[in-house]
Length: 597
Image (cartoon, rainbow, N blue to C red):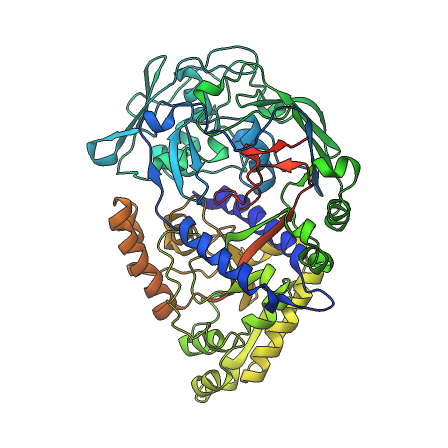
């Protein structure tokens, strides 16, 4: 199930690692002065961590609520350092493509945010967030009237079937696999190797389309999170007409408010209004500007300089997924006009020092490391308070079920680590057990992390053998079951606001194999039983089960030492209106932007 998921997740984490460079230590780290901003972030994260609500037909009806002061016209310039990973919806699993997908593609359901950060799943192409029956084993969706693709073709249930079935094809390898595995099991490709292109289809007992407006999913067990799963960009609709398979990446068919006018791979991507998008059918998106001019190859430092200067076209510009350059953070903070144009908040990622349980078998060693690590020095290397906050546990502040006071190793009280406690635990551990091989990426940020980890653990009495790993293949190397490393830094963020998308991918015993995201190689019967139980429960009951699993993992197994919660800090031009931090994308909310003049 997770080999492809792991690759995509690895891309997410690599993107995060690269993004961390945006918030690395300045020449003078004044992160402590961000106290009020940190408090604001924490309050907003608390709102984000609330369980997601499911909307009925009334809550799913468009048009979307107007953004105060919004006006029509103009083109927003979008700065991005690297080209997009994918434009085929079935391949989308990372932030860069996800942001653009919000403008181009619609799905059966979608996340809707209010001004306080509360999130609701609404019907996007569907009339509501879905109707469940048979205890959550069957979900039925009815399509809205008047929904068309950019070519004017009405979208029907056949297009939804096509979207699902093409995910089984071999050329789709980088997107989410939740839906496919829920419908057809871990070896889902065997159920439909042709991906529906050969005229063969999933049986009606799995996926039924009794008429043009109705789609019915049948599962072998309850799937209460399905409405959130279908809101992922990776499950956006691909109309059957115009699907060019492998070549679809170059010119996908739009169903959202914008369509592609020009695509110069790795150089630029120009979006213009999709005249066949009907706002009356869309409860989430807007079409205020005439288009978006996405420019690739603009480094983070250049983006920041241009946006601070705020001259000419830069007044109409935003950052897509990168943030304020580390060396210029204070230039923004100390400039009231620029600081007013920022959005900031927690990302869903928890960075941790992960143990290879096949090699670090002594729980005392894992416990001592967890007490000894220095979150304070690591966060300083990420940009101080604008780059992250101390993580007392393995659940992010944005996740439902987050417990801010759950701190079994005293990380909040001693963010620099508790060396005395670590030394006490280690006193009876033989010298061989204190020798740890630490893998770190051969990048600037990897080097800084290496120094911080090596310094803290050496002071606690460990013998650290640091091994440099190529940054480009870092997650591939630590993802190997037979890797030669004892400890390594990794990060994870939820796929949608549910602990199930955190605990399951990285701690499920069935996910212990080469290329898996279970980097610690946890294979525990109790954890597996709790995962199985939680996945069939309704959110309120599941929350209790996920909490039990989280506590058991961190206190009884210790697969990883929590280090810090990642943050994002972005800047826009002065003519850009409607900017706010999105609790879903963990970036600027691209759905509601307009130009003031």
